[in-house]
Amino acid sequence: MAGIFKAYDIRGTYPDQLDETTAFHVGYYFKDLLEDEDLALGPVVVVSRDMRSHSVPLAQAVKNGLRARGVAVIDIGIADTPQNYFATGHLGASGGIQITASHNPAVYNGFKMSRRDAIPVSYETGIDRLEQLILATDVATDLGPEAGEEVRDVFADYTEHILAELISSEPRLKLAADAANGMGTLYQPILEHLNLEVTPLYFSLDGTFPNHEANPLKAENLVDVERAVKDHGCDFGVAFDGDADRAIIIDEKGNAISADMITGLLAPRFLRDDPGAAIVYDLRSSWSTKEAIEEAGGKAVRERVGHSFIKATMREHDSPFGGELAGHFYYRRNYTADSSIGTVIEVLNHLRETGKPLSELVAPLKRYFATGEINFKVEDKQGMIRHLAEVFADGEIDYLDGITVQFADWWFNVRPSNTEPYLRLVLEARTAGMMGEKRDLLLSHLGTPED
Image (cartoon, rainbow, N blue to C red; front, side, top):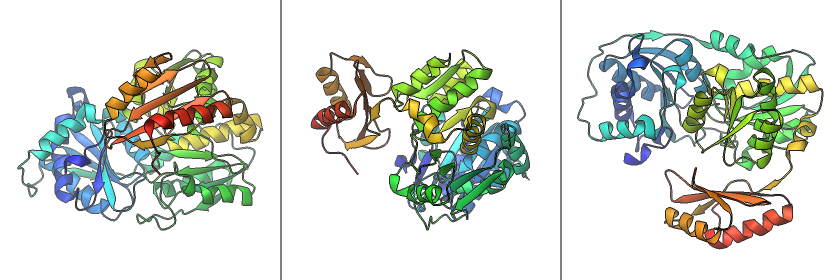
């Protein structure tokens, strides 16, 4: 069981790694992660679940654990993860628990947790404590409830909240959207309010993922939506992940746009209304992301990878917007939480306002040549990082997340996985030739990439 406690959530295969007993204890001990200010309205937690069949018994077990500990439950039913964040803030709850395994295959499940106002619970801010309590527990799972349960439907409020960001309904544009049989399916009625001609792909809830894996970071999972954009002459496309907290945007030519380019594209829109504001981006992002923020008069704030770090830094700087290379986009107006459908609306607003094709809008940001993220199996991760620091000692080095080394014409970051014996490389250079040359140089140290 120990391996299920991850950097940002609890996740494992059902029922061998986690089951209803685990879920009960997650609920039972969740109160120990809450602070005094979280309990201002009394201990109450929003619970919701994704479309996996085993999310139903796991959600019930989590609720039983919460109630046995005297924590009231607001059950909002089947929901995308951003809706759980919204409900937690909107209803003034002490925290939220979403039962989901995000983009993982059908056999997986897990728990994403937050405190009041959707403040994330990470390993460093509570999951470590939860791990200690659960692994040492002897609390019986058949304890009776000490607190009540309320069923609430927040989708109408959620829809109103999202649609408030739509600037214009004209002109009518075309969108191809791939929900991957995941929670993005719930967005269909929201999309109908956007005056779009929508080509929907796999908009039915099915936790077995019969069409393709719900992970839009893998190129093979984008093939269908890329083809649909081209075949139907769409203005853009979007691929959601399993719990719909991530979005990968496709241009009108059927090409996936790297998420750091979308961060750079959208940042100036927020800076028009909030001049000089901080925009937070993760350190894997292109130099052009930082440059786009600064060119628009913003303060570019570079942060380590992970939603808990990005969100904390956004709150510290009162930042209106932030983005990660993995397709997470964060909004101050949304309790500093992710919103994939909100990102669709922001891209739509930009297309309607400029009247230009998406590929043309993004083209100025494609100033450099990047490898994307490459994985390497390395048992001594810290030893390799020390080795790279010695080899590239003539560069500008920082250790914000792993090691980043910057030169005048290229840079790279190598960071360790939090849960696996992997190092992850991202490298960017001013020319394609230099990118290939420096990539091969790093490969000579890191070894053969993993698939």
